[in-house]
Image (cartoon, rainbow, N blue to C red; front, side):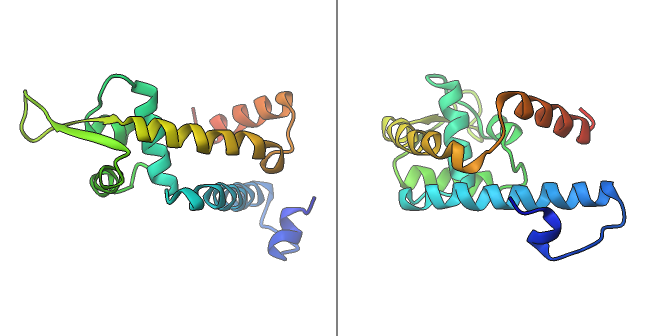
Length: 151
């Protein structure tokens, strides 16, 4: 296992907090790349996968766009475009709200549920490749990351 110093070829950091921030950013990018490699054969981006998982979590209930956005990992994503692309792939259904014609009710389609099942089974098999932590270490990391964000 290579240290952050070895990975980015930097011998010194200003202090341990700077090093930790760089390490978190580097590791997030590293993990993102590995998950993206799993998603690529399914023609789904990270953001689209995130929307599908959010919709699966509310299934069978539909959600409006602003509620999806509030739950996204990257809330600066263009949700309107993500919804359009997922609809074009027949992974979700989009219905205009009866109450407000500017609002849409979005739900995951059977094809989207099936795709998620396929992706999640592959991701489960890859967890040991992506993550060398045991349960106790993962719990500690989660606590530290929550603390980093001030939660």
